Structures are given as structure tokens and as C-alpha cells.
Length: 217
Ligand SMILES: *Cc1c(COP(=O)(O)O)cnc(C)c1O
Image 1 (cartoon, rainbow, N blue to C red):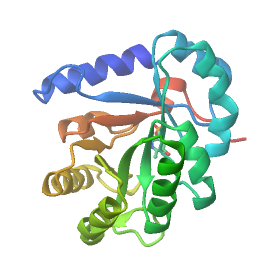
Image 2: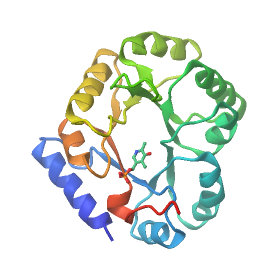
Image 3: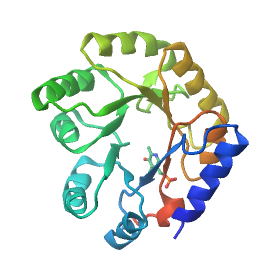
Image 4: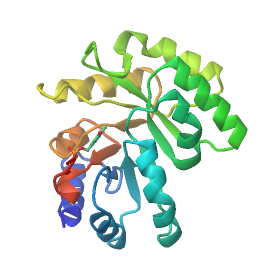
């Protein structure tokens, strides 16, 4: 299994960056993975997981949560507005706050349910037309509007364009977090989590390097 190897590589990257051991949270991205692979990783003591689809997570996690203590579930995929209720019920963190309509729905549901999942704002660091995320220039205004709603985003998240060097995107995200007083940075996936840690990631989202390739068939 890739979990031990990824843990070692995270530790080495923390050390190389002069960062405290354990300062980076590994989110094991379990979307689409077969149950036996996820259970092996749970049994190995991993308790922080990421999912992309509300419905898929609703089907899988209540059962595992009753069998494994301390599971922490992070939503890292797009949240449709009509899934805000379920997302607040199910997740301990949401990395993909990316528009005002969703912010309003989440604020409403958080008040209604008395739950406060940790929030990250997704930033479209590449200013890609079709991509989710707040544009770089619009972040300060969006953050202020979220705070007006009583939300307290604690960090930023990005998915760099696939065909580009991710490092400039990681740097942009880090600078934006500094400028806006946000402590957490969700960045880095299987192919680039070490580079993300060097640039200040506090949360890395690693799927295939832990579980093996995803089979969407
Ligand atoms: C699927 C996914 C990941 C994990 O990707 P890998 O390349 O398998 O590590 C990380 N972040 C997001 C937003 C994802 O959708």
C-alpha cells in the first residue's frame, strides 16, 4: 500500500522545508476507490479522507464512521447548491466554497444544523474560464461577503491547470492567504504534493498515490 510511503515523503518534505513534523495534514482522497482499498487505509490508522461527490460519500461513510473512530471527512469536489444541506451534515471541512449562492446556502444550513465545518475558498489561480473558483482579484471582496454572512473561511484551496507548472499557482495561493489573514492552504495532489509542501501547504490531497489508479469504468 502507498500510505506508508506517502507519509514518509510528507515527513521528508516537511523537514526539507524547515517545517515542523506533522504540520501538514494528509487528506487521503478515496473517491471512486473500491471499499477494500479504503478499509485497508482506515485499518492502517489514516483518519482524514477526501471525497468529491456528496452522494457517493453519503453512501459510503456513515458505515465506516460507525466502525472506525475519529474519521474526519473533507469535501474537495464541487458542491451543487441543492447539496449544501447534505454537505453540512456529512463533512467536517469543505474546500470548495466558490460562489456567493453556495456561501448563502452553507450559512443557512450551518445555522440550522448547528454544525460548523471548516471552510476553504477555492481560488481559480489560473484564471481559467471554465474552472470553478474565485478569481484572484475578487478574493478580498468575496471573503468580506462571506464574513458578512457569519462564515469564517480559514483557508484557500487551488487546483492548478493540468498542463502548467503548479509552483507559480502554489505561490499565488500562499501570497493570497498571507494578504488575507488566512492560515490554511489546501494544495498539492499525488503528482506535486512535495512541491506544495515546500510552498507552504497545510493540507495535501493525495488519492492515486495512496490507493492506486481510479477506475471510472
Ligand atoms: C481527485 C482529486 C485529488 C486527488 O488526485 P490524485 O492525483 O489522485 O492524488 C485531489 N484534489 C482534488 C480536488 C481532486 O478532485
